[in-house]
Each structure stands twice: as structure tokens, then as C-alpha cells.
Image: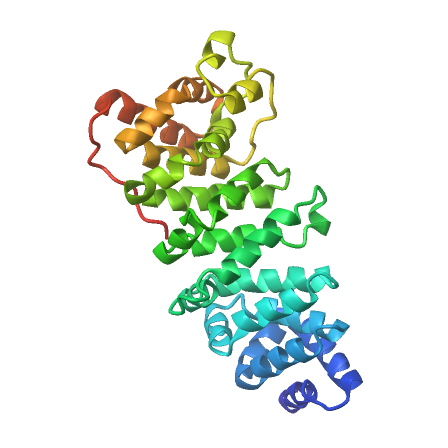
Length: 343
């Protein structure tokens, strides 16, 4: 078996494209099971470079898709993901997405999934952010955000770039990623926030997580956040506003974006993690004086009061109560307790 697998890996670099295609199809099948993954991991020194070469050279064929799928499965292992980054997998994936993504959406989707796995490791995040090269730093991220915002689809099967949402969560866990996303001239965070209206739950959850991570910079980047208040407050407050119709008096104290949405019954955001993330983001904003003032200006406390009445998840209720205790206990004063940095 070992000799056969070694021979199979050799076929990935065969001169005959039909041989390469047949070999990579078999490899893709092997990566779908634990035994196959274990055997290929033991031969990663040969298998990973061969798959990357095949991805680059055969991107316009079915062999390219098979290579991409194989790399997605293999890169679920953090050690292999780190090795792939060192072999230039981030650059290779971005290059193929740029050249072939429009013609081969299935290939582009697989490569975005590969980037999700690669950005679970620190070196992968640094490679995607292009840290260390000021001339191009953030260019890959900008391209992914542009594709993410242009390709939204009501059908999850057709949503080629939906997994960019998970990449954004990964890169926003580090300060360099948050800085790129929040840079006003780039306007990336504004584009991302506006995707919160998507019916795609993966997109919605990724946007919520990205906003939450960016709010860890509220102590130094509050004005940049509040400059997006028109989009930010609806994204953060509507998921935790409950399902009730708000009174005319309550709505008269809100901006149009909130008052119109709260003038009729709504479907609840079922994912408790989304509700908790938006509340954590609100908490980090209202820790700041200007953040509290902005929160009061949109009648935020009333929205949380009504939303709390509909909440039944203990962890989410705790997040409501934490904000409530801050508003009551500190008023417009300073709050000493901070949040925990994203992990």
C-alpha cells in the first residue's frame, strides 16, 4: 500500500495531463477519510508541493478543482496548514481565484475554504494580510471583501464567496487585521457591516463576529466606529431587539433605520451566538463615554430592555445584564473593567 501511494503521488507530477487528473481524483477521495488523510500526512513533503503545482497549472480543468478540494481537507490539520503557508499556498490561492474565479465558481469556493483553514494559523493570517510589505498590505483582504459583497446570493449553494465571512472573523482576531478592516480610506468595515442584512446565516454570523472583534479597538478607534453609526447600530441592535412592535413614542427617539424596522413584527435571529456577539460589541462601545452617548442617542437602552423580555438563553441574558449594569452603575463615567481580547 505504501509503495502504491508513493507511486500515486508521483503521478500528480506526470507529464500526461490525463494521468495527473486521474491521480488527483484518487487523492481527493483519499483525503475524504481518516486513513487516507493519515497516509498522505506522512508523505506531506511530496504531496503538498505536488498538489499546489497542480492547482496552479491545471486551474482551468477539473484537476484544479480536485487539487483544491484535496488541499482543503488536508489543511484542516494546523501543522499541514502551516506547511502550506510556507509553500506559498495563500498567494497561489489568491492568484487562481483572481484568474479563474469568475469562470469556475466551484474552484473559487474551494479556494476560499482553503483560505479559511490557512487563516486559522498565525502565519496564514500574516500572509493574507501581506504584513511587512506596505505597498500591497491589505490588497488581498480588499479583493476578498469586494468579492464577498458583490456575490451575495439567496441560494447558499450558489454563494461562491460566503466563506469569506469566516476569513474575516479569523483575520480580525489580530490587531493588524482589525487595523486594515477599520482604516477609513479603505471603507472595508462599512461594506462588511452592510452584509448583515443577508439571509445567509454563514454571512450573518461572520459579519457579527467581525464587528465584535473590531470593537476590541473601541478604546482607540471609537470615532471610526461611530462614523459608521448609520449602519453599525442597526446591525448590532436589531438582532437583540426582540420581535415586538415598538411604540410610536419609542420609535420617535430612534433614527429612521431603526424606527422603520421596529415598526412591525420581525423574525427573531435564532442563532444565539449572533445575539451574544452583537451584545458583546455593544458593551465594548458603551465602555467609552462617546460610545454611551451615541447608544443613548438611538434609544439603545430601551431596545435592549424590550429585547431582554423575549430572551431565554442564559448566556445571552447575561450579556444583556452586563450592559445594563454598566449603564446603571456607571452612567456617563468611566468603566474600569475591559473585555477579553479575541482568541
